[in-house]
Image (cartoon, rainbow over all chains, first blue to last red; front, side, top):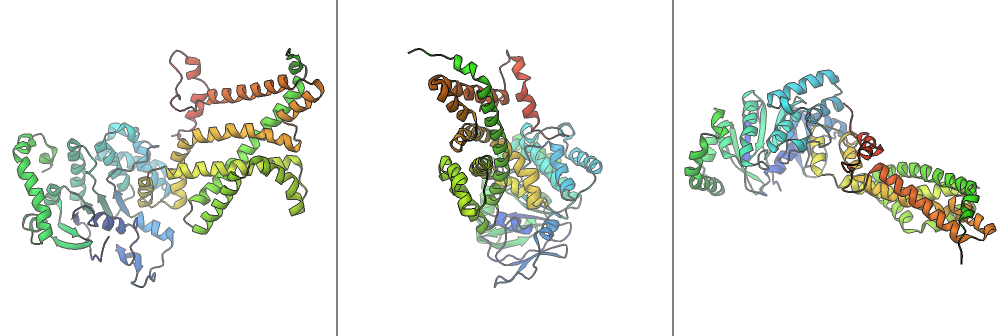
Amino acid sequence: MLRGVDLSVAQGEVVVIIGGSGSGKTSLLRCINLLNTPSSGSIVIDSETLFDVDRNGTDRAGLKSAQINRIRAQTGMVFQQFNLFPHMTALQNVMEAPVTVKRQNKQDVEKQARELLGQMGLEQHVDKRPAQLSGGQQQRVAIARALAMEPKVMLFDEPTSALDPELVGEVLKAMVALARSGMTMVVVTHELGFALEIADRVIFIDQGLIAADGPPQQVLLHPEHLRLKQFVGRFHETADLLRPFLEGKARHHELRSME
Amino acid sequence: MTFDFTVVTANAHLLWQGFLITLYYTVITIAAGLLIGLVIGLILLSPFRPLVWLGRVYVEFFRNIPLLVIVLWTYYALPIFSGVNITKGWAGFLALSFYVGSFYAEILRAGVQSIDPGQTDASTALGMSYGQRMRRIILPQAFRRMVPPLAGQSIIQMKNTTLLSMITVPDLLYQGSYISCFTYRPIEIYTAIGLIFVIILVESRNGHGTRKGNTQAPRHLPALRQGRGAAWRRSFRRPG
């Protein structure tokens, strides 16, 4: 349940949204591309209005579903559960939307799709079905699939939460590369390390409201908001508990190699 | 009491004619039923409440009235109400098709609704329209899950065509009762008819290998492994 959120993301900015479960962070993300329909408010992407309903429920934008789909195609989304199409190979997954939605030439799309999958380190796996891939590989296919539509903004909904711990690194690595390439990104995640490393801004959502908004160092390392203190505190506590163990393993951890 | 099964072979040509009629109605009513089921199923899945309600009325109507009543009503009562005279063939065809269509519609609805909502999320987020999502993402996955229940309903449909004999369509059962009228050998004739159904339906199932957990023939039967089943399953894969 969101209770009035004002958020603007600049081009090329990487915004990380954190918050407890049920705080509304996933709802916020799903509202950006209208997978969830807000009861009122407005959504504007690259100066195109996607949604505009006032408090009385009057639709001031009045978009037809075809127009909504067209604007939606300019946003890419990556899901917690990957949601790859299981009846298609990795390559077909990536090619599907450009061919079906944008009606682009199949040969060009295939070339671009192979390139994207290559960037994700998946050259070996282009002809495999999702069921034959590991979680980390599936999520990288999902990122490539979203990028194939050449989106203006990428939305990530807890992209590493369903992964085995040893597979988290490869997905984060792909996301870091994407952020460095200048992609506008809105990321819901529990990976506070990732937020510290790459975010331009961290937003803490609590009970449907933006409770804190600022640079990652300020929000995560010097929290002022009480609930945020508790939230980040738990992370620091866990980190303290795990530190001796983590430091022993850190040498092999891919996160380290990101820098 | 002695049995005399020579009446079966002696009247094989009559049974063969009846069998062809049975097969004919099985095929055309399944084909029409699938079409009806697709339309009604999509109506059941539509976001428009009044449309869904109409679909539900259709399904509940045809699923809950005994088929025999539908067949008899279509042949004897419909012409009186509508003023249109229809042949017994058309009456049987319409009754059987609309009846099985209601079951197919429910199979389609259940098949589509069993697909993870994440698939809709993902395809929607990519900008796909409702039609594109259905055609490219949801239905191809749902159809695979629908094969076993569709096969089951189609088996029932073949057996249900025997009700056509009640409106004197000369199907297998009608021919059987006709033969037993002049041979006085109903036991032999009806036993043979039962066996014909068993053989045809078991054979069609083996050929298509749709039984759950037995989609692959055993290793020591390579002939079956390369049989129609494999080709049929291949036809479900997307080319390219």
